[in-house]
Image 1 (tube, rainbow, N blue to C red):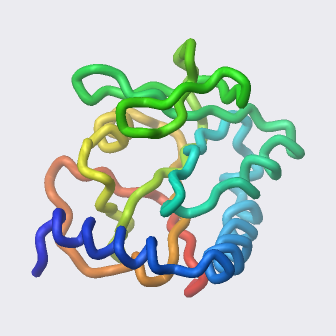
Image 2: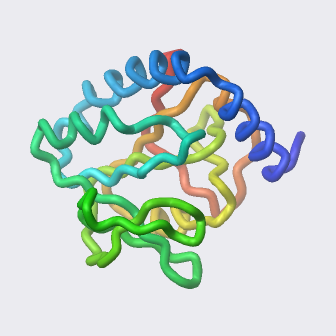
Length: 175
């Protein structure tokens, strides 16, 4: 079985090579599955992530959340690999050291629903992220609902580690 580092590298290469059309088409189908769930409908404060060019495109989900008058939160990385979520204001963002857009003046707000990013997921809902452990640390004490959206090829077999936190709902075009 390949290492997490090897899996990350392989998934990043697949994501880079995926056509924009294929991404857009799959993303729309997957997002419509997510927004039809009870957990999504019941949520008021949704934590989303601002995707990099290679990540799953959540842009339509931001629009849906806004139209449904949900409060949108985005992550901010802190020292010691900690993270918080803060209200999304497209006019008050700055690039982090990771090259990700984050809130300039973050005030911690607790979401009731988090869309968790990553690079690979197993059938049980455990994920391989980008390697910082920010989400696993945050989710260790989180009591709300979690979901992930990803492309079919990102569903693979791997053994989770003791510090990994399972995502409650996973959405791809396969279900």
